[in-house]
Image 1 (cartoon, rainbow, N blue to C red):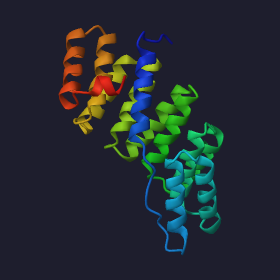
Image 2 (cartoon, helix red, strand yellow; image 1 turned 180 degrees about the vertical axis):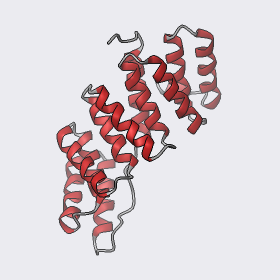
Image 3 (cartoon, one colour; image 1 turned 90 degrees about the vertical axis):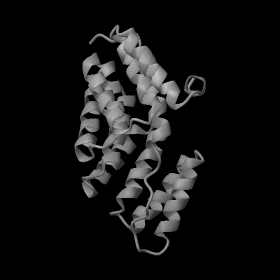
Image 4 (cartoon, rainbow, N blue to C red; image 1 turned 135 degrees about the horizontal axis):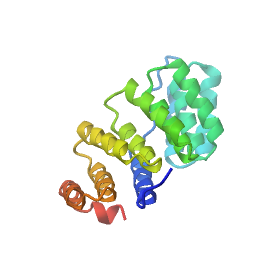
Length: 209
């Protein structure tokens, strides 16, 4: 399908959005001695960028408690950040088997498929995340990115509108919608959105490059 001229810049912008919005899922959900400490160590290791060490901590948790879905979720995020996508997919699927209402796991599956340029699969996972948790603005924003890359600009605008409706204080959403509107030829509306973004964060264009 045809791509829009600004698709690459939108992809990079939303990729940054996803990176800054994602944080590890906290809460050890276990009464077993030592689980909480291992979980916190795994989170800290991943935050430092030592994903291998974080994975080892989550491995230890799963040996002790195989039903610990947050260990699967966070180990999957670590694998994703290492670009070990097949292992990440396995872990996210384990997470949703144990916790079918976990919107973050479906979102993360969408990120993995999007990184592999499997746009339809990514759209499906983001859609499930939205069904599970309708107030999940980053899923709307990420699905908008996939629609744009897949040639569905109108659907992309619909989704970013939903993201803004859910979280109207987040200036990056206005920049993304402004880019979509600019691609659609509505320059006046695009400028209005860029101005809204600057009203919310006067340094946004400097800090986001």
